[in-house]
Picture 1 (cartoon, rainbow, N blue to C red):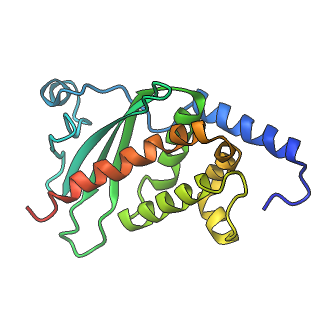
Picture 2: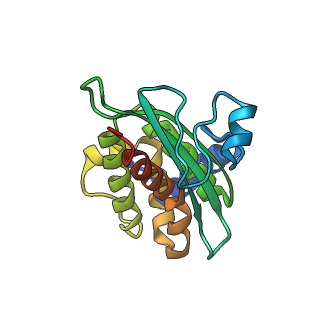
Length: 191
């Protein structure tokens, strides 16, 4: 995918993209973990604690998940609002926000994850999650599938991160929050 670039040039590009994404993160919003406070503060609030579910629209279900990486102290709360599929269309991510703190890798990964999955069907988002995890398991070798690399778009820069086992958890933190919050929301579909 990056033919003609030296390893040093690739590493510098990876670092630049990660630093930029962490400085100006997409999808990051301050919100209260308490649903009563959050609902009173904003119509944008969609859920409270991890097991509390609420939705702003009658055709949506939402949930949130708090993830913590004890190795480095990174933490994030990911909120997702899914369409309930009642109109016969696939379940779609209607809204995705997150709040958290951590290293530039975790914050950049969350920002890029937001850009990749916001507005996608849940099936598409979970496929991207699986592909990103495969990239993180590559130990710096990347993916053998050029189409999969293209689907990851800017997230491909984390190939360099995958060389460092202690940093992989940082990059995967938000993706785990997305999967967990979506699974919680899905338990409410059709109820």
